[in-house]
Image 1 (cartoon, helix red, strand yellow):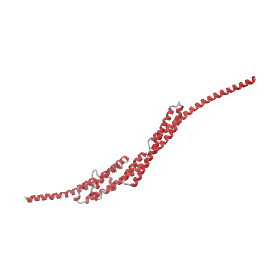
Image 2: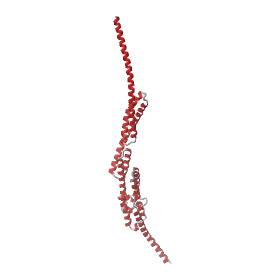
Image 3: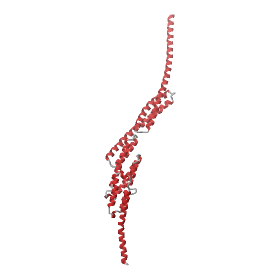
Image 4: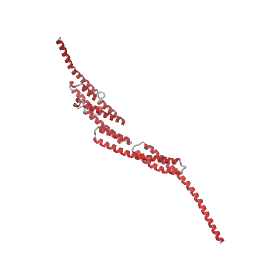
Length: 322
């Protein structure tokens, strides 16, 4: 009876010892099949990720079965499982393949967060020893560089300076994450120079617009009170100032792609027409006053002429009497 119990115990122990080996083989096959099925489009875009994918398969296939553990499953899932690094890279690639800048901004933000996953992967000794961790780091640098180029090109071809500065700032973030010192220094300088120029020009433009707008209103007031000569003259003088100041604002707003330029263009046309009309009104006033003064002058000359003749007649009469 005791021997039977000992035999059963021995069988149980052997079964327990044999189970891990069988389990490891099954886990190995499971992980190899899992990674083999993971073929996201991003592998064709980034060679580093394709190499990572192949290296994971090589590692799983070459590792002894007894070294395939739950920890192995953990880092494999982190690298190539659902919601893993490869899938997240694929999502980044999908966002970055769209034409709108906002999608690229979102991709940049998500890529920055992906660094945490890569750091976690590097914490797995088995993955690190088999050189799997170097590939996602290289791919991420490649991705950031691509985004830096994308935003830099956008900035260079953008007419709206505000957007251009924003794109340069995004490029700066990308190049900094890619640890490209040369590009980071260049774009950082570009952001500072363009920002300084924009702020100065906008200060001048806004001040000119305020002055021009005030004189524009004065011009229109003169036009609306055309029966008042003083208002007409003030309108003419204001129109000249309005044209000068609005032209300055228009030039600077146009330079920086500001939408207010179109509004000012309309104001310039309006104030020019108003100035022409006010001058015509003034000339009519001038003609009327000129005619009035001519009449006064004629009357005055006529009276002087009559008075002169009267004096001459008086003098002549005195001479005859004398």
